[in-house]
Image (tube, rainbow, N blue to C red):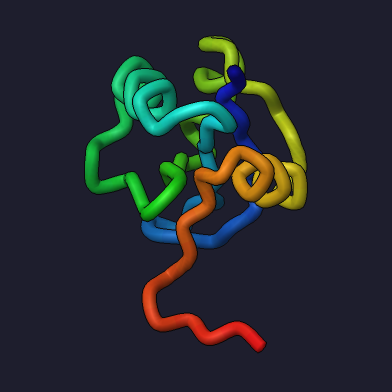
Length: 91
């Protein structure tokens, strides 16, 4: 059971860089961690929370594991918790 976060590298609102916060075990674990971190519900997007760079250090202090973006995607797929955008066609 792990909560994972990638480095703040994604440009977003307010000119900040953003990270992705996920759990590789359950959405319940992810939502509980996000509440403790102080993230609003609107920061949740399908299978992850978007985290501003200003909260990255706090997420680590609360126990999130720093991993690469590739690791986040791989762990989500392996856990069965990955949710793709609706309407995406693969092939």
